[in-house]
Image 1: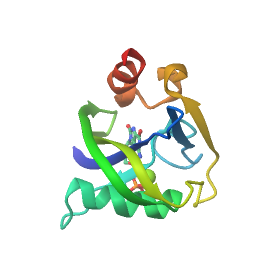
Image 2 (image 1 turned 60 degrees about the vertical axis):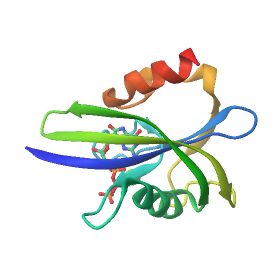
Image 3 (image 1 turned 90 degrees about the horizontal axis):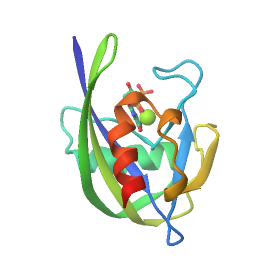
Length: 129
Ligand SMILES: Nc1nc2c([nH]c(=O)n2[C@H]2C[C@H](O)[C@@H](COP(=O)(O)OP(=O)(O)OP(=O)(O)O)O2)c(=O)[nH]1
Ligand SMILES: [Mg+2]
């Protein structure tokens, strides 16, 4: 089975709101809400992939990212290992640079069911903080 390493950014502002983006209708985990991010290329560290993906998907330049947790999950036909970072420093203002819907949600109001199943333990941890 294919095994993807994925870098994911939990972009959090000073008001403890988190930036979410909606996955496209044609993607894996279509229409679910996600923390922006994407696949780590063979020549990249997780942090390098995070910086590249957040620039591509949200337009920000990350200046502060701290590793938070990892999650391993096997979907029907792909296994993913997600490397989550808390991002609290950046230049610019994040937006849906690929045209995807986006919203800021207070950390305490995250809803696990809106995310792909792999995110459940991470959302639970954020809600417990
Ligand atoms: N970005 C992101 N991906 C997630 C999350 N939860 C989760 O299970 N995934 C899965 C969905 C995908 O199977 C996998 C890779 O994410 P991706 O589709 O964003 O990868 P990418 O940006 O490199 O996409 P692409 O270039 O192939 O379009 O990770 C999440 O919170 N954020
Ligand atoms: Mg992506």
